[in-house]
Image 1 (cartoon, one colour):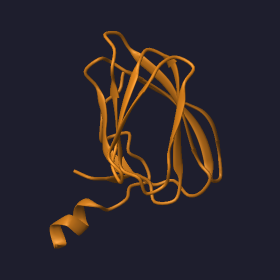
Image 2 (image 1 turned 135 degrees about the vertical axis):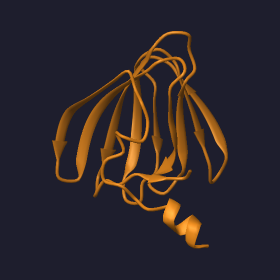
Image 3 (image 1 turned 90 degrees about the vertical axis):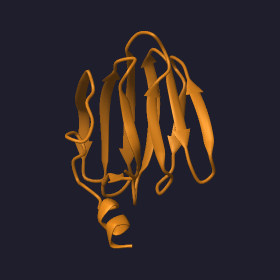
Image 4 (image 1 turned 30 degrees about the vertical axis):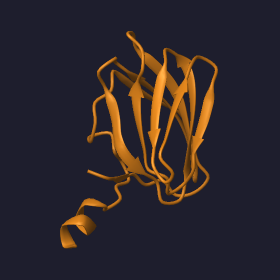
Length: 118
């Protein structure tokens, strides 16, 4: 049980946990932020959840494949489409296309954390 508890420790900055082609922060204020991420066809944002905030994904370029748990679900998004992963719901983001995936991620409202599942 101790190992599982140790693995589920939230972090305030997850940028060191996975690689992306590009990561930009467009806006940030207490309890809310907007970032832009670009993933290559082989990159993934690994399984994680957020304790207090939701992630709203909005695709600017390419195709996104989102995997979610509780309940298990797979969502595909194209340009102009969005999806909200609510607080506490584990999710994984992948690039579903053959070229780069660029998306906005709106995070809030509340204190940000990133809880890795692996």
